[in-house]
Length: 215
Length: 319
Image (cartoon, rainbow over all chains, first blue to last red; front, top):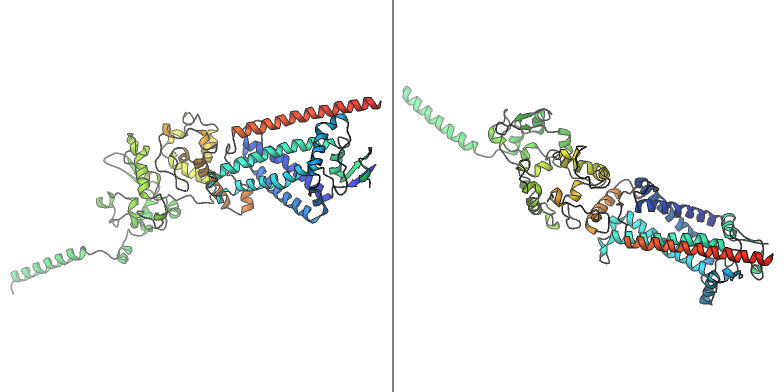
């Protein structure tokens, strides 16, 4: 039995609030985008809820960045350059092949590094590229009056709308993959439990996998 | 001096007096002397004209001519600070007003000739004039459109420009009321007009008649005065509900500006009404986005199934 405290309270609070906001934004966003469907929220209400949730998401994102800058959590997002492609290949091979043959996890969770290279890359991309762009495009919608008439020769509001839509689809995609990939821990619920309790627990240490993760 | 001499001399003074009074009469009155006369102060005029029933029947046409001026609306109108006599020149000191004072035709361009900002705008009264000449209100053969002038829509006693910050619904209602005051049949519940329009009532409360019934103007310029006939108007949903920049931009920027001018940026960000249904719609992106998400879902399900099979094999091996 090994247990690592990997997810401090602020991070868990942020994560679950963010998750809730994601769901609200997806539903209200779809209600605005595909307005009129029976299962959708009434348009007027959807707009207000979406705007509010978007503002809260912005505050949450700022909190996340400050948290990573001011605590040790930020180190988990520092990509080690040496052996980067090798690790990436090994991890991708595990998800694409090894996992179907009961191969051991190629990555060992530790207090120093809780994310594998693939996770690192996707979280970095989502939190430091897609999310800020999504937030920026959302705010650009609200304050479009300050935008120029055209951007890059295209109508600016339309450009903002298309950027927001593309980013939204990408983040829905991320959410799907994220929800699935967290089930690939030692057990299906290992990672979910870790994000609820803060403790990463592995009940059945297998050869070489949790040795360094033991507390 | 005999009686004859006296009468000749008196006649001479009389002629001189008449001549002098005629000469003096042609000298323009000073502003102060006009202001002091009855019928030159707004209160004098409104004493009668604020009566809602004040009207007369035109002996030539037989039509009732409404002479009522809503003093409250006038006070809030664009002309609220003007004196009645600034526009209505003539001798209104007597009642009934003399024929000469009644026949005048007021001309907006007389005052609105060149605004001080005119050189910065492509949109001048000349443009308005040109556009109006092509308007259905000018070209229609209908007797109802006969003599159509600015005042039919821009009631000089009540018209005011909408202001940024006013609730959109209020602006739309006030603007559309101008059209509906003549086009009364539109309101008839059995009217078939606009039946093609999805969510017709919602459109009527959110969009001005002018937004569809005028051709597009250049960005940043006011709405055109070329009112289009129903058949020539915008029937294309995607002119607003898509990327078409000009009409969408017109609606969106206007709404956005209105929203932001209110009570602070945060509350206006929350209650922002600027989003127009369909503006983020792109058939290509929707198809691409939804298919990638659908395919991903299938791959994940297949992946999960593969993992489950591996788990069963492991269990079997262990047992």
